[in-house]
Image 1 (cartoon, rainbow, N blue to C red):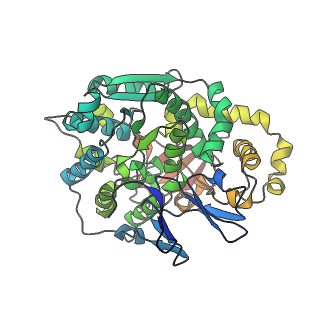
Image 2 (cartoon, rainbow, N blue to C red):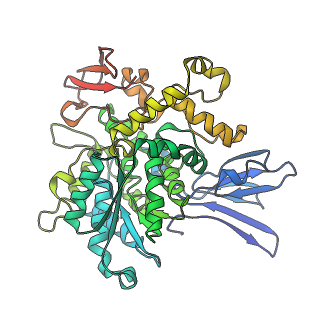
Image 3 (cartoon, helix red, strand yellow):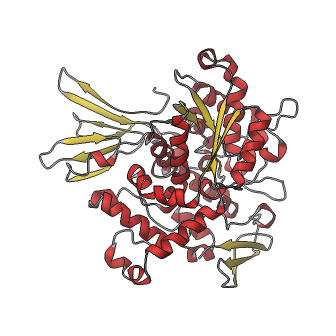
Length: 474
């Protein structure tokens, strides 16, 4: 019956039993450990357990732990969790729009100053637009006024800064633009790994600018922000979804992505902000909105060049209101950027150049001996792993971090969609094709793969009716 995000332990003094539980998707972090004396430890941070427990692990989202029963029980078990493809529910734009607006409105219940994170992409822009539209009717407006503060972070000249400024001007928010340098980010990496408790490359890349921004937001007296995490997982918004061979695979991948959010975007959003005492709220991961988004026929979510559908078309169409526009058209239909890419491409390039200097070729050649579990595949991953192992040397700690091949934030299973993706060891999405060159998933076209770094091109085959070009970082 609980509708929200939470992680708690409830103790019953009458019989000295307790129940611990975590929210449906795992927006709030939680870990559980076991002491050598049989004691059970529960904490929102792994670092509180790693010295006192002989074993610890992630407390699974959507579960409760009962001391009386001595184990876990799943309490969140929606229909989509079985990964069965919904075939009957049609796409209803106004139903989707209404569910999202309600998700935003309920998160405006607050007794602290708040704002919105605004990158200028679709997700954060819709959160900001809906917030701005409904803020005046809330109790929060009576306490803090009807002006909405928006925040963005990026390198000078980055894509996000320009797009966010345009959206902020359109919506009339009080906009705060924070700049950082590559060196600022590099200097913060160890702190980020300490707070995030991960060595996942994509998470660290995206967490670092968010960590730097959260510190500045908190210094302004703002204590809560709304953010756009979850949309890409629910709606197949990452560009690699263009290559899903059919709607069954598309839907299964969205299910896998949502189930894994607690180890990636939810972990990043929560820990990078909580490090400075800033709360983040994510309306896309509202339980009711998830039900609506995951119950529609996935055919509607799929990229289709012939029908003019780009990624997240269902969301764009739902908010394409000619009479009372939520956003300018070109923002509403702006192509997806990964957060770590949108803050400035030089950020990723700078990280690679820095870690190239920190990790020698000899260290990489011995990576399998040094790190036999989840062996780093490149120098950037090796550098993050060195820091993580120094902070969290226990076996249990390294086992909490997911690992496996990825392209543009895909799961390892989706790598199978395109043979050439298996050659990539960079998870960035910036080399996936644009709308003009992506497959339409209709039958045996050719795929040209360009290796980043001037190593030429190779030809392969993908389920697509058109010849397509995609650059892969290798």
